[in-house]
Image (cartoon, rainbow, N blue to C red):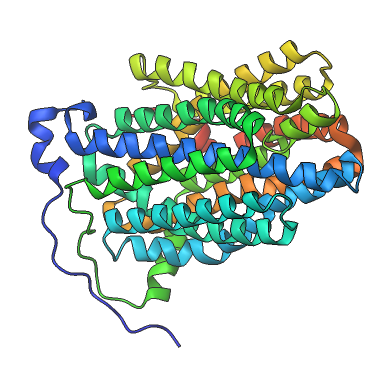
Length: 430
């Protein structure tokens, strides 16, 4: 039985719309955007430190009784148990983001992630926690992310308005990549002190992010939409994504390429079993990818891509595949780091163009649902990709898995370029 239709309360115009004429296309002039940016940065930094600590902790626990190839399966389970709630909850969460206050939803989800960080800290203080307990908390964390992603994506245009949206997306990507750089590096350093210390730092950062979002003044309630059942609203969002070929082409390409050639699980496996560089080296390699993305984000903030978006996106995805291929063949730490750096820069181009195309093509009253579908695909590429990588490492070994993924990404780029000509020919991004 479907839930009874529920109409959202009347809303006032978002702060960004009222201030748009005064602030133009510069989102940094908006107080709420600055708070949102700091909240995003601290939350991503917390997630990266926590993820670095969790994957390494699970890998170390599993390696006590299993070889590295089999231990990688357990590390891959970290991604899988987070993807399952993401798969089950993301679409209803997107519908809720188009019905409930998006700002309060984001704050509640970060609060849930804070609770998970406290649970990880408590388990780490035990000394040798059981793997099932770590995976159970990771699953709860995945559930929080399911509701966080569509609400936060839909909140951004409400804070900055459409005119400032392209620069705001670049700035948000800059916050993400800053956290992606600092997180693994700081996580590796904190792990050298102790695992509980790393989880404790994540808890403090989640608390900071929660405070920033609670201080945002923008009304996060979405616009009024026609009264309909929740299931009908979900179906409407799915139909929109499916019939808008630019959107479905962009998010499905990301799913396939990141699942095949993603480095989230390959880097710790290479650090522990191929390059033998320990937790500090692991943090360095993880940070190399984020450093490339950060450098590109800084460049795009000054010189944004405004034309030939589709061509740039497909070229960037192809470079990403080549970098994964060379990373898999490399036995030299500095060469591996360079490939991760270039791959991160290419990924930044792809992410920026994809997010801009999706936001521009989506009306405000459907942003939560469209964002939920996009986040579901991204979640599948990341979390399910970790599980996939774990299986491929078990079958082909670390090097074989990376080489296979790089070649697969190049093949997928060619197939998608042919199957989605509209995406390939997409031009203006502003």
